Amino acid sequence: MAPVRDRRTGFSRRRQYGVFLGYVLAVAGVVVGAALLVLSAFDPPLFAGFRMAAATVTTPVSSVLATGGRVIASIPEAISDHFAVRARNGAMAEQLKAQAAVLTRARVIAYDNRRLRALLGLRDRARTPVVTARLVSSTATSGRRFALINAGRFEGVRPGMPVLGPAGLVGRIVETGPNAARVLLVVDPESIVPVRRTRDGAPAIAAGRGDGSLDIRSVYTTNVRFRTGDLFVTSGTGGLYPPGIPVARVTRPGADTVEARPFSTPDTLDFATVEAPFMPIPAEPGR
Amino acid sequence: MIPPVAAKPFAEPLPPGRARAIPWASVVAASAITAVPVIATVPLMPPAGLLMLLAWRLLARFSLRPWAAAPLGFWDDLVSGQPLGSAVLLWSLCFLAIEAVEARMPFRTFWHDWLIAGAASALCLIGGRLIAVPWAAPVGPLLAAQVVATVLCFPLAARAVAWIDRRRGPHA
Image: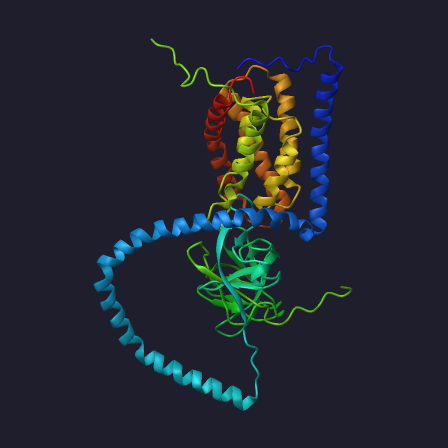
């Protein structure tokens, strides 16, 4: 392609100054960008208002698109359901029969549990769901793992609330707008969740790696062994996440720090429940 | 052979204001592609806004002002999940770098443009990773995959830009 010779401004002072000002502004863009970056590094929630204003516009669009996607995705499902319903019915009846004994045992255990807790005088904190919404979009181009849910301040969603999916912990709310809220997913490289092993209650920390999996780090300094298939649930430490929510399963054995796969693979087909923080968030000093 | 004729040869060209707004609108719309209802657990989607911006800059030099990268990057930061200022900085640097390359390499083919856009978008993605994600995060292979996807998507962006630019008319 031949070069465009429009760089010449001729004798028009106005044109010369205009071109010069354009380049000055271009360099100013770099400076402003660097300044904004420094500000956001020191105070990440500083620009939450701008971000959530944009999300207020994009979230309804995403919601409509997600609904359309669900309708399309449900068509092949409906067809396969139609043909597979008998076979699946039989399989489910078998499964029900096989699990009847386990269910009875679980009922006995649950009853025992209630009775013993009453004996001990334990008081459980009730979990209070705030709203059930859908994850509608995510930051698919950035290394950070945020998602937007289509419920916000109007529905009572506030920053700091945990978000739960059908399979396990999804993340927590970091920013809220009137009709949308931003969720920090557990796989985000800056997300940290206190967990414990289901087998023996060993405490650990589940930190996001940024590549779709989690790091399970032992909080003991001693040599803690992790086995493949170890299950980790939230411990309730810190008071943000309610205890006992499934978080991750260890994928390869190791000591002290191992890789784990999160239970919840959030998509737009599932609901996400926003709950109030397990313990009330203390008021910030000076506010 | 009959030369190709525009469908409406006597149609009025777009008014200048709208013709100038179209490149901006297309980059804004491309940035907003993060609104598609997909919950990604890994970042693999190419930054469509950046690709559109580079395509406009390289294929239609005067469609965007030299300072347009900063406001467009501001919008991209709002919807992309990067810390605010990341795209403002990186996109502005891209514009300045392209300006410098253009001064040394005025005669370019599409392959040159592709090379320049590929290098610019790769540097933007790597810069964005350094800005947003902690050093220790093992996201190298994913980043490489995203860079490859982005470089391969540039011809699509260039096609889209060429199509819009043709519709925009010769006087824009």
